[in-house]
Image 1 (tube, rainbow, N blue to C red):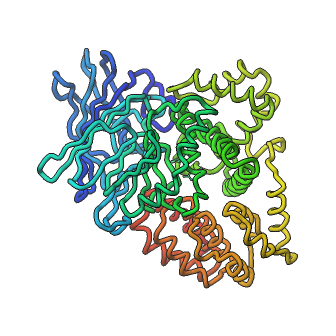
Image 2 (tube, rainbow, N blue to C red; image 1 turned 60 degrees about the vertical axis):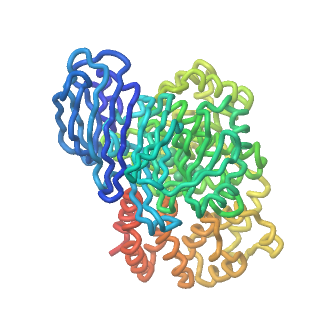
Image 3 (cartoon, rainbow, N blue to C red; image 1 turned 45 degrees about the horizontal axis):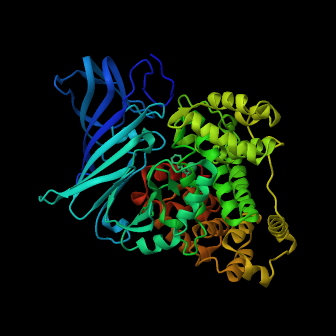
Length: 592
Ligand code: BES
Ligand code: ZN
């Protein structure tokens, strides 16, 4: 038995599946997918085969041409789920598992019509990263195993299914049901399996990019993301030809728990990006960059998550620098610095979770999630870039992607590769300190600009009466305002809050980054005029990045704690399971 991924029952002495054939029947009434998955091995195999499952009802296991075979579910592990062990007879090339998902499958959120923009039809979406694919499909649920897949998705007539794959056809069955077919020809890790079903419409943004959304939001989405082709071109300039054929996007209902998810050929996005001024498209740059860093070259397990996210944050800011210049990139790094400091603070009693090369045996990867692999990781990448120079670093990156394309690698493999291509660079930047020591090394690169310094000085002068001038207030772009708000002292008075709202019209902002930063300050200050807006936001949006700080800030005062409990009671049935768990964790830490 060899278990190279602490979050999977995958046994590396057994064969890997090469390809999945999925048949999924989506039952909105029962909130269940009835599924059949055929795992193809691309050759003969026999003996035990261990798959990951969580909450699945296994109905039968067959080897085509042979008939039913023996299977056994192991004990329930609260993080890993249950091992499904199959006894596979000689000469087997594929096995078929029939199963049903649980109503509370973590990968799936089932929305009632009221929870959608159109209020006309239900909606289903999946979110498999980190280890939730096993609640949707029995599989070797580790990025060490890469699979191509085909899928046939049966949904109620009138709804559209999209997946992290290319469409290959659809047909009405005439019985009130409709089938959509898909093909993902390239091998992907299981966490990139993705499905969404709802009332959907698409708009083309370029010959290879389109955006999907509910009919009510599709026009706004097409406007917001109109610049995506330009981003793809810039990214190609950095990393080489886009490897996944199409780059489509799906805007989800507001309960989507993340900002974006890099499902190949179909990035999933939160509707909170639709600010109306294109100010939040850095998330699209990020998910697009994952097409290379993450989806093409993938972390071998969640212990090496920084290889996905650190590189992608670095790439995202590199793309932004090309599109919008040095100042814009410096502001991006400044916002990241704030997120990093918050995370280092959050984990100050668990310093083992602040290293890049993590040890996650027995730890739920969702609990280990923070900005550290993102921002500390991006700083290590930037340090290497500064050490060897931009040009040489880009050449290195191209080599790296060529060497490891469509594979899943560890930190050690990455370091060995840097060692041969950029000898001495790891030592020169003291990479060990990033990889294995807590906190951020003193030598980490800093990103400054005149504009950033001005904002910092001004924000820090708040307690001494420093205030932005009318000219500054009128001239700042959304990101400048955001950085300014982030740099203000955390503990303002209600009078301070009134001043800010009056001068910046914060309460009515449609940019959720600004709105939530403001509402967090207001909650910290026990500023009552903001309470209705806080309630509105927490009832509408399920993005964890916003729920965590807002509910956290509401914990400071007696009446805001009462407000938080009351809002959570009303909002939690609409939250995704992951979001609900995160908020519950925050509320549990409130003083009694
Ligand atoms: N892959 C992540 C989202 C994710 C991480 C899902 C871990 C599940 C577990 C995605 O690429 C991401 O990082 N999204 C960020 C966007 C950002 C950093 C620009 C988000 O959702 O906020
Ligand atoms: Zn990411």
